[in-house]
Structures are given as C-alpha cells and as structure tokens.
Length: 229
Ligand code: HEC
Image 1 (cartoon, rainbow, N blue to C red):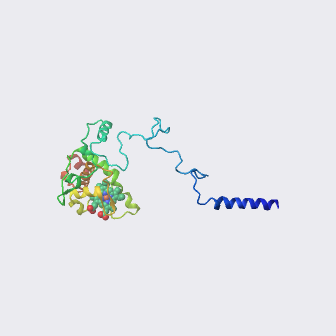
Image 2 (image 1 turned 45 degrees about the vertical axis):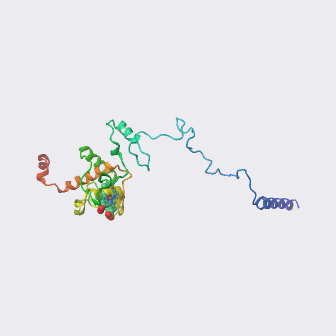
Image 3 (image 1 turned 90 degrees about the horizontal axis):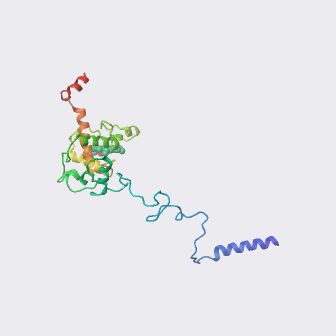
C-alpha cells in the first residue's frame, strides 16, 4: 500500500509536470542542464574583456597585415603601415590595389580585346616580386619552370597549363593577367591574394620562364656560355 501511494504520487507529478503546464508561458529562463551556447565566455564587440593584456575585446589590426577576406581600399592606412615596416618610401596607393577599374592595368583588356604589354615599370624588383609570388601561389601546380608539373600533378591534378606550350607563348599578357585575377576553368582566381601590380609582376615572371627555355646559346653571357661546354 505504501509503495502504491508513492508510485501514484510520482505518476501524478509526472503527468501534471509535463502535460499540466503545457501552453503556459513563463518569463523565467528554461532549465539548463548544460549551459546554452549563448552563455559562454567570448569576446563581445565594444565591451571590455580580460583576455587580452590591454583589456580591449576588439583588438586593432597588427601593423603591416591585412584582415582576411577584405580588399585593401586605396588610400588606406595600409600603405602607410607597409612602408613603415619595410622602411621604404610609401608606395603610391595605386600599387596596393586589389579592386578593378575599367582600364588595361586592372582588366588586361584594351577595348574588348586582350591587350599585351606590362603596364607597370619592369624593374629587377618587380621581377623578383613576381618570382616570389609565383613560388608561393603557382608553383605547386605549374611547377618551378612553369611546365605544368608541380607537386599537385603527382596527386592526380590533371590538365595544368604548361607555359611552354605554343598557346601560352602566343597568349596576350592581358589574358594571362586575367587568369591570375579570375581563374580559368578548373583553376581558381588569385585576385583576392595578389595586388594588381603583383599580378603583372607574375605575368612578367612567366614571360621570363618562357624565355628561359628558348634562349639561344649565343645570347648567353660569355661566362655562362663557357659553363655550358
Ligand atoms: C591548384 C592548382 C593551380 C594553381 C595553384 C595555379 N594554377 Fe594556373 N592552372 C591550373 C590548371 C588546372 C589550369 C588549366 C585550366 C584550364 O582548364 O584551362 C591552369 C591554367 C593556367 C593558365 C592558362 C589559362 C588559359 O587561358 O588557358 C595560366 C596563365 C595560369 N594557370 C597561371 C597561373 C598563375 C600565374 C598562378 C599563380 C598565381 C596559377 N596559375 C596557380 C592550376 C593551377
């Protein structure tokens, strides 16, 4: 009898507890056995936080870096920062541009045709920048000499362009520039990773790679010609 009453009470409580309160609204918080995701330690915009030494939750950008996923607006503080960290004279904001305007420099097009010519001054520094950016961004697929035999080809990526094919020897500079900016078929674009000038620097470097495979012995400096023999 004692157990019957106890069981009866528990059953009644369960029924009232679950069914009886249905439809009622409570202003109180629901029971939480595990804390909800909204109540967790996190950084809140515009509020102080002890996580960082300076007590500010919204940290400012590290000097000389660009936040991921954002283009750098021309005339931003970035060119200032970049020149401060490199110790060189500030580059004109033009040269740190990612966004596209309508002219050849930005689009690779002259009218509605691909144009040819490098619209920035070709200097040893530009070539070096092109080599550097090529090695970082392109070599994995296109290979160190641009023959389309980078390391990814060993892992099954097929159809990588070989810059030494006739098609690419003849291709307009602007079209190569456009491939870097927007990609081509299965190759994705690198416009978000490389400034406009860096893209032209890579075009220049690709031309140098092509030339490197075509140079005639008599065009080499005397010492290198001697080393060939
Ligand atoms: C993930 C591998 C990969 C990377 C990285 C890569 N490419 Fe490519 N690239 C390809 C493939 C694949 C093709 C052939 C696409 C096609 O079908 O036309 C190609 C094609 C090209 C072409 C020829 C496009 C045409 O019009 O036929 C050029 C030029 C080129 N890449 C330049 C670059 C440059 C410059 C970089 C570095 C900024 C780069 N690629 C990075 C895979 C890559």
